Image (cartoon, rainbow, N blue to C red):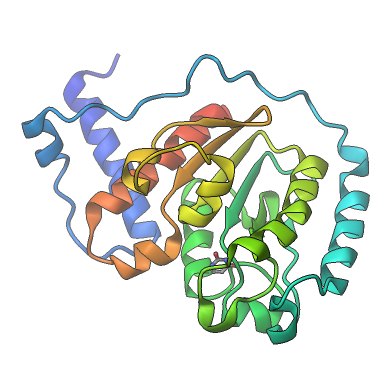
Length: 247
Ligand code: URA
């Protein structure tokens, strides 16, 4: 049986590998502050969350195709006027894990694919650091068209667009949803109080599906040198992996 020191070393090595995989270029000092202040450990999965009923995957791809067609043709809100093309989302119709971001940026608008710009490249690295493949998860956004100048989507735009997201989730029935950033988290966890730092780190229930809120990759990029944020994201992803039985 590995001793305490061995386990701590292995945890540190694993975290360092995650940081290096996602492109962090600093030396990490382990949890000095948290230990000194006796900060509470990150809570684990509440026992009350029951695993979702196994979905019928056979119709998921068909449903996703129909939803995609509707998204591409949608002109319900002002965002349609400014788009090059809508960005429905992409991935595995049988995905166990689904990531939900805020909305397409410039690169996504040009390519019609979610998370392909700088934040997307970081998300891809995070997925790969989890020993998963991008093509095996599903990646979608709250709004499917790029808000002008990448502004935050407005309430009515979210209201018009999220029925598409809900339909995508209903088709896929993932085992876990990861909400990236505040806009997606506000949708899945409307009752949560406080900033992302206090909301993330535990699962919430959304219609029987556990949701793990975490920081948006853009926020990680904006706070490049902040190792605490990277550590929190990795801790969140480790909980996701544990829930998927992958640790
Ligand atoms: N940010 C998002 O929230 N979604 C994308 O698709 C790209 C950047």
